Amino acid sequence: MAVGIYVDRVTKHFKSTVALNKTSLSVDKGMNIVIGPNGAGKSTLLRCIGGLYKPDSGNVRVFGEDPYYNDEARGRVSLLSDNYALYDKLPVIKNLLFFGKLYGNSDSETVNMSRIFLKKLDAYQYIDRKAGELSRGTKQKVAICRALLGNPDVFLLDEPTAFLDAASAEKVHIMLEEFASDGKVVLYATQRLNEAARFNANLFIIKKGRISKSLRHSDLYGSILKGAKINIKLADPLAEAIAKKVPRFDAALGSNIRITVRNYKDINEAIKYLIGKGAYIVSVDYSEPLIEDML
Image (cartoon, rainbow, N blue to C red; front, side, top):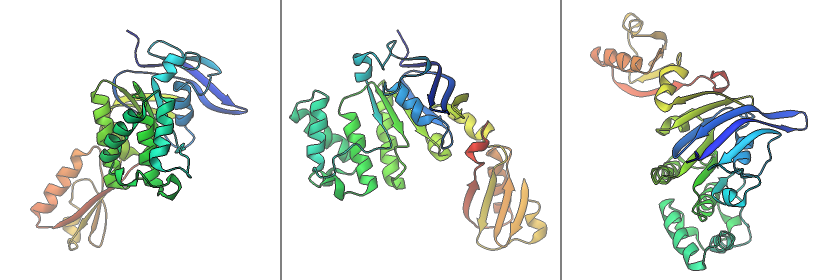
């Protein structure tokens, strides 16, 4: 049986700009993340997989078929792009009924599905509001609902939590995990490391239009984030002699201790030391390396 998504040496130009440069990936059922900086080619890759763009060279297959030419293959894919694709002057429910008809749903099917999805996303209370009156975050929730009405086998998402607060983003994450556990293919594009690390997923790092590395999420903090700066905020400053003996010590400023880690086990060692010295820890924050610097 053909894999869910197969991309083989795909190149895509927009005039003189090379958006994808002989990039390849293969993913099947479950959660998959494409991570890379702005301009890396994430959105173009998703649009090629969704059948919206024809590659200049190379091949894209969805369950063995070319989604650009094959209507059935394209119909098995749903793309949530950075455009909400909602009609601002229509109420949410009329937007969803319209798109439900395009997917071939009856009105009752669309209403039932919308109720389920919007309740999971804590947005059902807006079902009769005009889309143009909603916040960006709420529009995004409705757009996620819209994208799922076709019951796709492949769900492509382009920065789906960009305008969501932490609680709403977590609801989206849980929904996507449920979708992936049901045997669907989820391919999630993001530039945010914390988003990538949230899932037990296959990770693909894209730079300058090319997949440069694939790894498991457990490798993200073990290798990619080597050298991260960790700031440990204490309730009270430590004596200089004690502070300088914190494992992986880098600098101290008032009640803040900064360490540079080799891996995230080093954080535990530093915290263990500080607690042993009677320090009270207020918070632990890290400054991740720029995603542009990822290998």
